[in-house]
Amino acid sequence: MTDLHYDDAEDPEVEDFDGDQLELAERLSLRRVAGMSTQLADITEVEYRDLQLERVVLVSVWTSGTQTDIDNAVAELRLLAETAGSEVLDALVQRRSRPDPATFIGRGKVDELREVVIATGADTVICDGELEPAQLRNLEDRVRVKVIDRTALILDIFATHAKSAEGKAQVELAQLQYLRQRLRGWGGNLSRQAGGRAAGGAGIGGRGPGETKIETDRRRIRTRISVLRKRLREMDEVRATKRQERQRNEVPSVAIVGYTNAGKSSLLNRLTGAGVLVEDALFATLDPTTRRSEASDGRVYTLTDTVGFVRHLPHDLVEAFRSTLEESVLADLLLHIVDGSDPDPQGQIRAVRTVLGEIGAAEVAEQLVINKIDRAEPDALTVLRSQYPDAVFVSARTGEGMDDLRARIEQRLPRPAVEVRVLLPYDRGDLLNKIHTGGEIITLEHTGDGTAVLARVNQGLAGELAPYSAG
Image 1 (cartoon, rainbow, N blue to C red):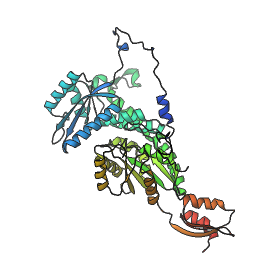
Image 2 (image 1 turned 30 degrees about the horizontal axis):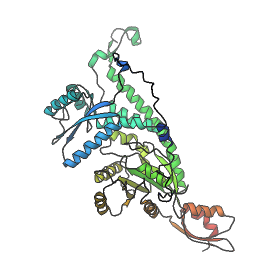
Image 3 (image 1 turned 90 degrees about the vertical axis):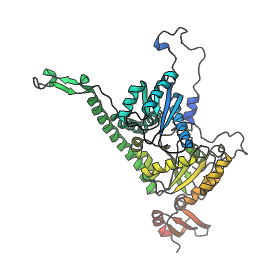
Image 4 (image 1 turned 135 degrees about the horizontal axis):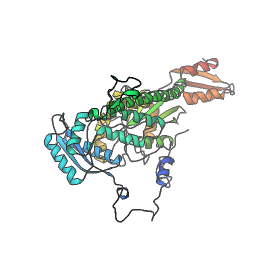
């Protein structure tokens, strides 16, 4: 598939460049039918109450950083909470040297949080950090509403957005690994006793407290984790087979990485016309999409859209999605997409590079791409241009800067290693096509004896061309 080029000025009917958007179109095709409500005027039964968004209060503890850093972090937590389907009522921030080991926030702040929960009618508290099981339990006992941490919140969003079998299995694995350490039990009164005939003939002396409910839950979780890991290994073998085929043909690969909602899917659609789901939401893309693209000189390469990163991405998620993230590790070039309109693009860059280091992709060649320049403030773009002079500035929505990006990708794609000079008979057009798609043509001339070609190709294709060498 060749690159698709668009020009707003030439075609005023083109409004966006995100492909066919079949999945999003299907979502938007749902329309409310008027006059179908069965809501009663006199609400006396719980079944007839309005379904409302979960009402939450945000809590954050900051040990270092400026006030701007704190504001940006709380704003991101609010977006995460809203993406998960909740209504944010209030937010509390506390500056401490370190989080309280018992309740995450100090004793006085717990009392203040309880007052805010009562005053607002909130039913959930979301903490901006990963709580220890004891902190989670103590805070819930004192605030008396459901408490979840940032990790559980992100896992919930992933569970909502997962579509493929692999994505669902990866999310479930991460959820179970998180849940295993946070099960709550109530002692021996929930133990499963066994005695007499039920004890398998053990009889007297074989009776006892048996296995407690929490132990049963942990055993079931361990069993399910084993099943999921086996299933993911099988799926990974399929992915590895496809990857090996591309590597055997020595097709260069480019992986699109970046912060969540930075515009990675829009960029893939703009470059290849892939038509993948684009939505102004956090973690809209969980399943990697690979598309074939072609450089201006005929070379073929692949572009892969990957899952977005975020600050403090849960370790369990990184582990569960490791096979998917390997697309970034094994790529020849990383397109690191940054939202130029974000209040803290430098923080996005640091967060993404931290995750890339965790998965072993820190040494892969990286091309920084500042996206959404149509929404960014001119002063902010000036600062980014001075800080990152090698970055390419684009707008996937309007198409501005896309020609520069294509040229930069072609420039940074790996070059074939072997230079060959061959004279190909006219009946060997298949070999000429291989040179076009897998090599780099320097000169080409049609002569009476055949096609004279000077090109750079990979080692395997050089062997096929050896019989036609022209010296």
